[in-house]
Every structure is written in C-alpha cells, then in structure tokens.
Image 1: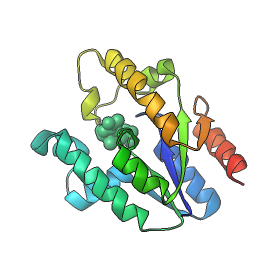
Image 2: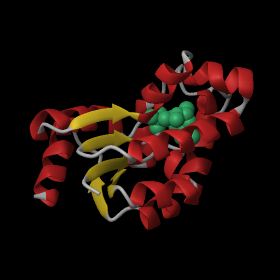
Image 3: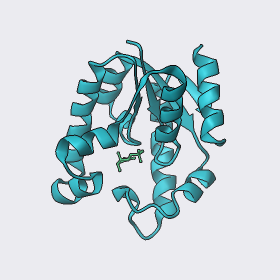
Image 4: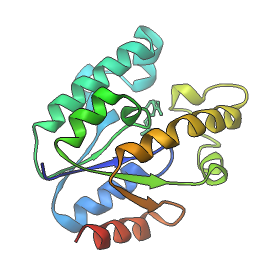
Amino acid sequence: MNNIILCGFMGCGKSTIGRKLAARTGMTFVDMDRYIEEKQGMTVSEIFERYGEERFRELETEACRELAETSGTIIAAGGGTLTFQRNIDILKSTGRIILVEVSYENLCERLKYDKKRPLLQVEDRNAVIRELLDKRLPVYRAAASVYVDGNFSSSRVAENIIRILL
Ligand code: S3P
C-alpha cells in the first residue's frame, strides 16, 4: 500500500519524474511500458502491430497485478492504463495515484516528433491528442488522489510531488 503511481497523458513526463522521485526517495522505479517490453521481448509498437491494442491492454492489466504485489515502488503507468476501471481498482489498492496534468498545447509540443507511440502515428496527431485528452482527463482526475501541474521542468514537478507527499 506504499507505492506511488504516476498517471497522466503520453508525454506528461511520468517516466522522467518517476526516475527523479526514485533518486530522491530511495524507492524503486518501474516504467510499466518498459516492464511489459522486457517481459514480452518486444517493443510496445511491435505488440500493437503483431497482436493489436486489445492484447496490449491485457498485458497492461497483467503488469498492474504483478506490480501491485511490490512495495516501495514508483510506477509510471502508461497513458492508457488508468483509463480502465480494472487497472484503477488494482493500482488504487497498492498506493497513491498522482496525476501529472499538462496542457494540450504543451503535450502537442512535447509529442511533436514522437515515433514510439502507436496511437500517435497518424496524420493529424494533434487532433488525436485533443480527442483522447478530452476523453481521458475526467477519468484520470477521478482515479487520482493527488494532482500536480506538469507544465514545468521534471525536477520542479518531482519536488512538488515530494512536498505534497511528505
Ligand atoms: C498509451 C501510452 C503509452 C503506451 C502505449 C499506449 C496510451 O505510454 O502505454 O503507447 O494509450 O496513452 P506513455 O504514456 O508512457 O507514453
């Protein structure tokens, strides 16, 4: 029950912030996408390509279950993880969910050159960001118990999280 789960849209900085938090607190950092990739021996893009998004979502829930068994872990969830009630239920029972909120404009800027996220490899990337963000933000907000403004440097956001949690 003492884990920290970082939640937020793709590009909000969950992984960078998580690593900084781990360095500051001595907790263990786990990036959920990397965890799935290592277990499957392929990248998230390859999983989407070969088996489809639905399979990826199953693997994501499996990862939630496994990581929920750990303690003292900072978990950077994927941007879609906490849009599924089953994952929210699992992760909520294992620690505090912190939402890192970043504006639409900043997300578009940060994700401009992304090549790794399958959902963004489309012609009108900003339209997809807009649509997903509008759909997901209320769900993230309902799942999280702590909110931080992510429109700053990752160091500053990590400091703010530490201040809130201490
Ligand atoms: C996804 C976000 C990605 C990754 C996958 C799907 C999403 O994680 O899990 O590409 O649905 O928003 P990041 O938020 O770490 O980019």
